Length: 59
Image (cartoon, rainbow, N blue to C red; front, side, top):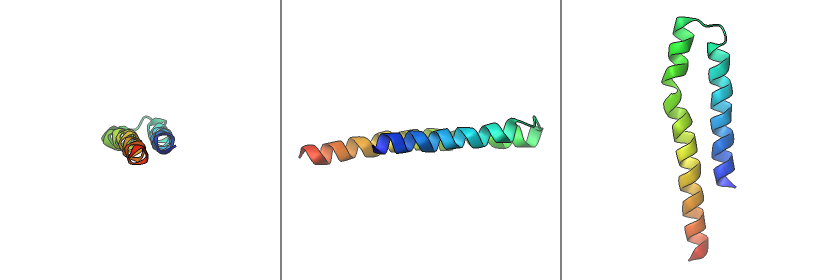
């Protein structure tokens, strides 16, 4: 379940970035480019927390 929460956060970030680049302004596109790390962080945190929760349940 935590994995899907991370993916939904990543999808929200993607929608936000799309709204930024829709106007094709240079500053907005650069701002969207700088938000790439947040997308990766949301996916990584979702995977890591899901893995840790599965490990704690198995113990």
